[in-house]
Image (cartoon, rainbow, N blue to C red; front, side):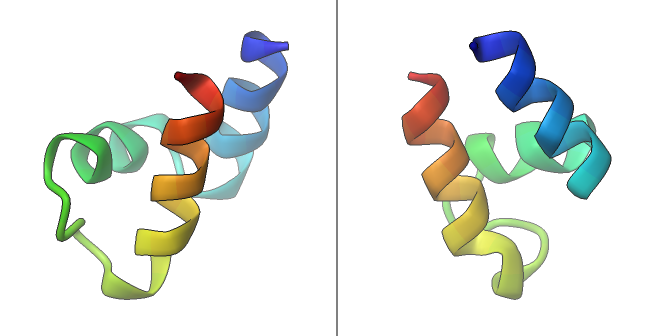
Length: 44
């Protein structure tokens, strides 16, 4: 399940972007903040 989510996110915006967004609450791209936050909660 986690691998599947990671794959979907990787195809969507890249794993590096997700890591950066997860590390920084404001996120590198404001428009993706809700997506990054949702993905972080699913992964957790």
